[in-house]
Length: 99
Image 1 (cartoon, helix red, strand yellow):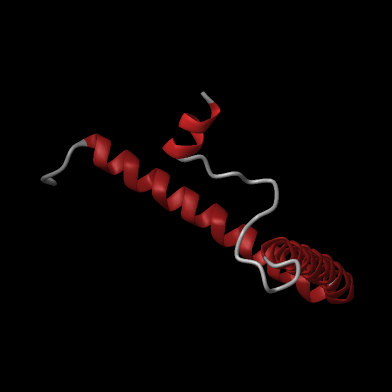
Image 2 (cartoon, helix red, strand yellow):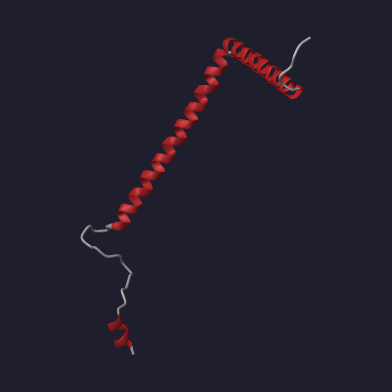
């Protein structure tokens, strides 16, 4: 006579977990053999992915540098002015003189 201190639900959950773990293990073993057999193909695929990612980073960096250069040129056209063109500051005196 065996005594069970847990329910059937826990037993079913542990069986499902073991089955999932077994399938994951088989998939990892299969993927490992696939990489071992087709290592040249995977090396080419990963090198292409890294080259594309590197080009994307380079293009993004160039865009940021160009945007910063444009902002620096907007901030100081001559380097001697501390104001922006076409900006007028209105005060109360200028409003009274217009009336």
